[in-house]
Length: 603
Image (cartoon, rainbow, N blue to C red; front, top):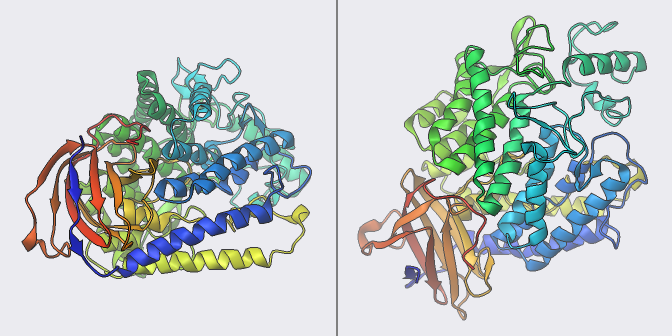
């Protein structure tokens, strides 16, 4: 029998709870309308007959990637069912285009593999009992652990992934003319990948010029396509995903060994992460000894965040798998080295985003998402202190910006401010903002009369009306994932004990109002005056935390004077009964990252 808490307070329906339930109900309506507008009867996207090159399948998956997550938060079963139908349709469509083989991208980099794979990770949160999901998880992981002879991406002897471009056909050591065909116009707007491209002067290279493009391809194949890059660390999420399905120790060992190999390379490079490792494991092996200049590295195309982000994704996966938060020292080291090179201008901290032959350059602000995720996972003083180094913390971070960005993740900073006691209106503000974005996207859809033959491959993901950031932050007490392939880190999950499914039961609203290293405070309310609601709380996205005790507080978390005696829990699950119209505020004592994570569900 699980420990059980029963609510008794009768309070007026909170505005935030009404807005939460309204958002969920409208998203349940919006998703099928989006599907009807943009897909055929077989689920394939209404689009072009042909699509060349290696890019694109990730964008097809991204069009619906968060639908199973929305279901896991409380969305309808229909949205969940259709998300599976649509995943299969995207897979068939892009197999016909040539980008997918054996249900996985034939070859691409792990920024894009990461974007498409989060769809699969959310299936695990939605329903881990689906046999095909488990089979895919193991089959795809084997493509990177050295267990699939048709995809020999892993070099066990040198502990490296053999190319920046990998997939179900193995490593891609030579890019063809067609591979980048759909990217040429876009990449012409980025800094050139090399400083010595014949016939190119200045910072940019015109990829649209066939002669220049031929030289770029030659240098890419010569310098960047053999050996490992930090971006490949995002593959640790795919292998962790297999562990969450099975608990098989070999997957945990692979993640820790691969991350450990990169930690050794960082140490060998004086504490700075190299962005390229040759086929024998030597730093700069294909770049004349330079530790910079690799694919998606310090120079090209984006710079620092494509170094920091995969390190943070992999370190967070290691924490999840072991409970050892010292793995966070790996991304911490890179972040601190850039902060130490930073300077404050006009009230903003600028750090170098790129390293070229001339040294550090391209000074710009850091996105707050990454240092905030470090703080969120660790809850350590050093990570809180680092945030004080950003002067914009008190000016720009608290703003609730309109829209939501590609990753539905642009409000991590104002949510952090809310948890710190600033901006008490944030829950209503973020719900209003997400509602406005849904309306805007559906309005765009209603007036979308263009020719599908001319649509960009990102067309649908920019209109997908399903949003999850507000629901994750407010109900689960956690930030949105790192969009390019991270796994979910939250304090709480919910399950409907009657319907035996994940997500908040009907009429139930939840608001996490405070958290620290040892506790999470949440208010739960039943908006129905007729029906009781029974739910199960889980500690962590994968049961990786443990509830120590549950203490019922007074009418608000700020008034603990009427707190009831603590109920011992000592489990990763807690049952809650919400009679009609009742509200409950709990302070949940927690031990974090102390249990073996799993997709297993309590219902």
